Image 1 (cartoon, rainbow, N blue to C red):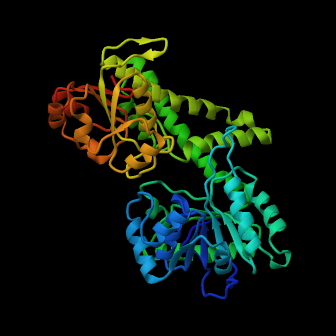
Image 2 (tube, one colour):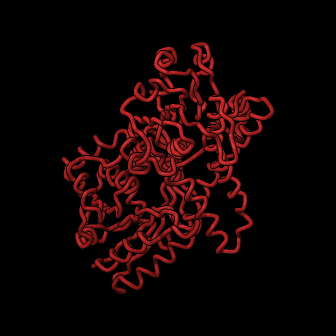
Image 3 (cartoon, rainbow, N blue to C red):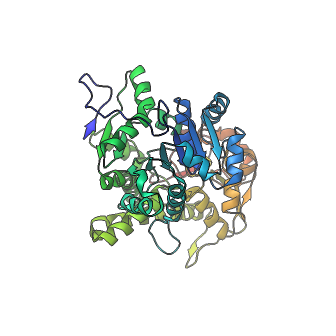
Length: 475
């Protein structure tokens, strides 16, 4: 059922529950303090809950305890310091302390792609649930938030049944996350929906109490937060289905960019025109070098793998082409670089030795320091393999990029990257790059050639400043 809240009609009754700890509202723990868990822990403490963030990484816990967010997310640092000072939030590496404290335990650990295939690696989920279950001494609700293959919640029930004392009545539920990096604080405090998969009224009541702060904030701001109460399988599928849809939409417009490039069309105008249709919409219709990050690429692959295991592989075969289109956009940048630099591509690709290329952007999106499967960083490495001297600059992601691609040359500023460059590639749409002065940059560069890998620059402005401009899917 879908429950919009607040509503003009009385809200369907959700049984009031008393948290097992005896506290007035549930005490919350978040197992895993990476991007997902730390963001939720900090934001729910901001909503007034008592919160513990748990992790096995002592260095990460020390940073968070000292008021330092170990990744870049706008607005999160201030909330962390405020909740630490208020005493509502603390971090620990002690699972016994975490188990004793919490009424609702959210599992927020990573589910990376397995090294031996496309499926999700659930070893971190298994380790966290098993350790938590062994330390529980009273009834509690374990809630999955990590993106997982359908069927994981039932498997976790089995783990809990095996490792937790049977007389405690520990229950499992699922509530997927929908965070957008760069907008995560708003996504937690003001979500566009909350989805919960539950098996009992008690679990439903506990999850409602755990989210009441979100609903109360919405009521004060005269907003609605739809609450979808469903079964385990549907709750698990919601997140991967949403990611598969978004990935498909991005790859669709990039496929149109491929057609525009050979037909002489302009994909930016095409996207604008079809985006006016309310059935389509204009979001995620920006053609460029494709999607990356820690979610979409690995999630669509894991979704395909799980569907194959369940005997529904044919239904998701299209996602394989979605993935291929996405990868092709990266190689297209190398092809454009060779064209602009007047180098022919041989069987092994172009030889760009003797050229200097500035790569602006290393993160997979702006307002983040996340370089996981970042198209920008992958393209920079591909350009370096052609023999070009590549200089990479990113406002926030340099340290993470250096760990991921240590052989690349990273510079401290956009000026350092562009100076004496034969070609500039804008591959992440940071505001600093979008708003850069093409006249000033032209005076620094050895050759005024630019590849707009995100179609984020004003092409008229750049060409009038003397630049040879190439966008993705543009004439």
